[in-house]
Image (cartoon, rainbow, N blue to C red):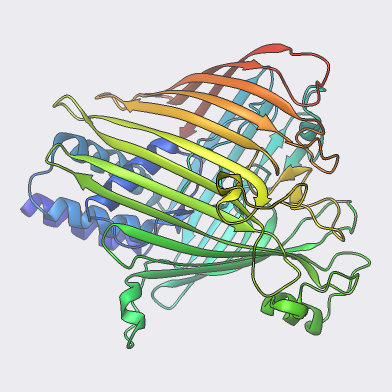
Length: 499
């Protein structure tokens, strides 16, 4: 108990001067966080990343103070604690590099190279209530086999940002920050890491809070994030604004809900006064969905849900997830939905702390009635991520801001990852993908319908000089190949070191 109390005190002391959050891109960390959340140590929503370190550290405190832990939970606590300790340093540095013969068609939660070559260097400093990360990422040119990889390359300041803590639990931030909103493994429907991060300013909660008011108490721990950014590029309307809003809550110990909105408005040649912005924010009926050139912007909205709980006495947890995003509709009722559903299990392998995370995921990004074609409902081909005014769509650098397969795609994924007793993560995945179901020319990833088999196996190996990541991929068929069925073998190697 003395050891647990000492660790808890260290965590609480460090929380005052630490990196504000853990970014998306580390699937091993996400598995550990979800495990601690399912066992009741981490409280509040964890489907949206970045996840604040203050929230994670409080969960580590509960886990350490709660008595003996099962080996796989203890191993997860130790892995997360090691990252937390690193992020409590007043100054810290990171270098990451990756190389591949061709970028992966699918960009899930785990970080992979967006193009054949990618190098990132960053330094982070905590200056009392102010956190500053500065650095940049160089990304090579893409390949002719994937048209979307040929845009927005070269140097970008990501992951540079500044975050100023306001009061005890809010933060004002600005910079280039990766965002992932959703419970899915293979993609997120509104904001994912498919595209490079846009420059943005925002305001968010760190640790979740409860609303002590009648009726609202049932929401449980709640969190809030809102940002406004700029897609700084030449496109249909140069430099449009991108706004994101998320309110999430945990009404029961195992159930989490997130409500999301995304807006694209303004830009060179488009109205951008307070009246236009107000109509877009209200986004109801004729305020936003006019169907004319006076419409203030492109608006999407959606929600995600997850249910994670222990099953039996084995220490395994069941994971059920559902994400959806909806396009504009020219009426009050939203009806054009894209959807993603997942089922998974995570838990111990053996008795020495190894951990497996495996599951199934299905995505259908064609706009349809809520249950899609499963119930024979009406569909709207070409709608998801597209707009009649903002014709370059819900994109940045020609890549979707939402799911990496773009709109009108369907995919079934089976995935599994084993974290062994030496913290090495071995992962495999198999996917059946149908891109651009109706060969809609507006879509970016493929302008033609293609049926693709996608298989991958990888390893993340911690060493004394950093994490070494290797992945092999086999892809049968490819985007924009209507008259042929090529087969590609891809390899990727990456390295990340922190000091």
